[in-house]
Length: 180
Image (tube, rainbow, N blue to C red; front, side, top):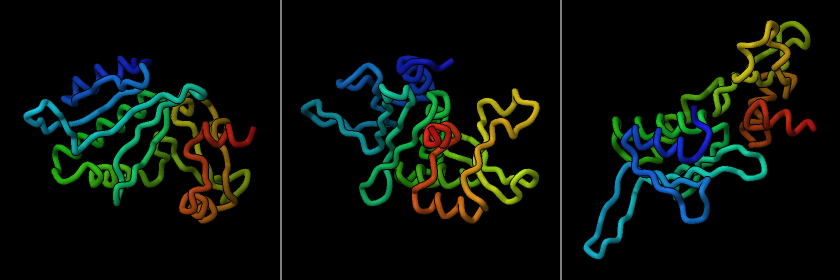
């Protein structure tokens, strides 16, 4: 079970990644597939990411390279975020190229789900056409999945517009928090 940054470090190192604790906290990890070492001992990575724990929410955020020198952050529970990191670096090693290309490829495959795996669902019974998220963590324990469905828009198109504009919650629990 992944519960701490040290658990995540061990799991990612077992996957062949270089992982070190960041100097600014015990809940922060520097992750890289490789380094270039210079004569003076300086090491530089072209494929680094950072994993941090949000002290207020307890959720984890991985910061990955994006297009044009930008960064993409994905927040979630530690097991989900570590699984995403493993997927990105696995694709990066197998496909070659730049880490940002692997990030785009892996995150681009997640159409139909939130980044943490929460499915996007459409209601066909109570509010026909309403679109929202289902909690992937708890849906398997429920007799009626509607108990862990949170509608976000009157239609799938409405949810797509929210997602495109960046105004939609990132996952089921973010949607619950936004309602409170």
